[in-house]
Image (cartoon, rainbow, N blue to C red; front, side):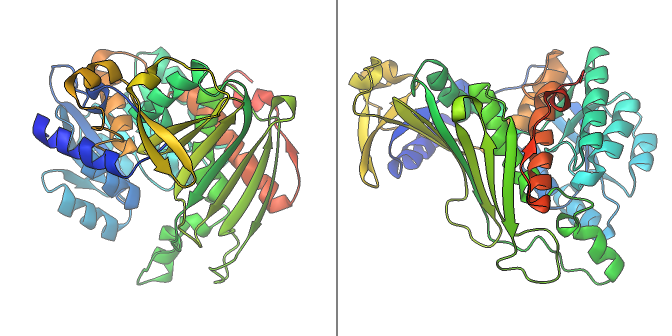
Length: 417
């Protein structure tokens, strides 16, 4: 994307926003990998997430997709249409045996297969990026996190796809949070609403069972594990607050097709000092999409994947940047567009340019992983960071299924526990 296209994108993205838009500098929006030989990579899992990964990998100069792998013939064929130059394999064993120069493996299988696939790649000496959550059971999550930590200690990179930690807009919002932009946390609320069935269309019962892993309670931790864990991870990263108890309720409100996994859930997580985090998620409705709201005594931060806003309370102290602010309406509130390099932009008369991400959050997670491998540094979300939100999501799913409030044992959240 050239400079003119970037400016056009940023100007258009800003037009519909309000509140205090939290925008990072351009070098974080358009990162560049360090020079060196292309990173030879393979993708395991060519389903919906795998296709999204293929699309983002194609944007990253310095990453070479050598192979794709999927045990489902239809998905492997579909992935091959998007990665025509990549070799195709039907099993991880064949992939690792057939690609001797492979450096990294991206795992985008069903969640119940994350552990065996990632462990096989790590055992073969490969760097691994694993879709989040790590697993659908606490046992598998802890085992994979331990394997990832051991690999990291041996000089290999293990990263997980909790994308908040690599999202440039979220990073900008976190810096405002840490600087006291909302003062004391009052409450947090996460939401994930996407109307879909979580079922596939397959020609045989066997293939149907293989593809319908999200509605199989033995293979998936439901909306709490798959979706709430991402909101919980952002909460942990921003606030360092760890929930002590979790309760939940679930129901099937649309997809009454014999499934056991709730299509709509409500969660309540207890934080310190009597504060709470709530979460609502559903595949029966799409309004709101993905977002997390952090309410404080001096302001509120709203995070919505590609955008973030700060809404200041009337009695909030002035932080100094307001002189450069561009005001816009947001429902009944009036907010301010905040640009990370506001002084420079004000001098250039470009305050209204820029809000949001030019690429999906997934892009920045994959880019961070590739950079960590090429530079020999730690990724933004490694095993230690990925384990707590994974476990908390699984516990929340157990609370929903049992209809009970469950205590969070701190030992479960750490690699040494």
